[in-house]
Each structure stands twice: as structure tokens, then as C-alpha cells.
Amino acid sequence: MLRRTAVPLGVLGGVAVAFAYVGAVDPNEPGHYPACPLLRATGLYCPGCGGLRSAHAIVHGDLTAALGANALAVAGYALFAVLWTVWAVRAARGRPLGAGLGRAHLWVLGTVVLTFTVVRNLPFGGFLHP
Image (cartoon, rainbow, N blue to C red; front, side, top):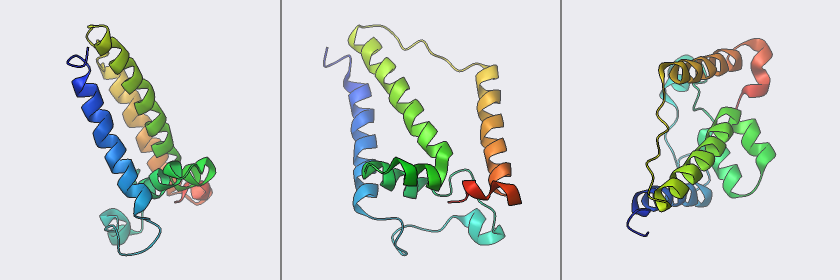
């Protein structure tokens, strides 16, 4: 069984190390991470702006701050957790993941990310600013 779950466990280990690093090195303090190039060049927030602050808040158990920093990232963390769990369980049972993304899924995902990006940069979308 360990052989079948090696890849999902490796992915989980990599994600855990990344979250541990972001949890230990506060992105709210300047100088630790590079600034967003889109924000620096245009003043517009990209869909990832606030993602590191969101991850830092999740590591420290502050869901409210995480949602305030980047709500889309928090949804992505939750979606990753669900998909990883399904993957690990199926791998442990010796079954393939079998969850390919079709065109419709990709269009929905792209539309959600684009809508989030546009709304957070409009005057009434200030609640989505990091």
C-alpha cells in the first residue's frame, strides 16, 4: 500500500513544507517575498495577490484573515484538500484517480478566476482587496 500511496504522500509532503515555510516566514513583513509584478507595474490586483498572506493566516488558524487576504486562495486550499483526499483513498485502494477535467470544468474555473480578478479591481470590490 505504501508503494501505491507514495506519490500522493509526496505531494502532501511538498505542500506541507511550503505551508510550514510560509507559516514561519511572515509575508506581512516586507522584504521576505517579492512583490507582485502586476500590482507593482499597474496597481491592479492579480488573482494571486494576498495568497501568501492567506496561507500564513491558514497555518495560524485565522480563517477570517485568510478570507480577507484572498478568498479565492482559501477556496483553492479547500478544493485541494478534498481532491487530495479522494486521490489518496483511491490510490490506497489501487484505483486510478479517474477525475479528468473536461472543457466545461476548465471554462468554469477560468470564468471564476477572471470574475474574481475583475471584481476585486472595481470600486465596489474593495472587500476582495488583500
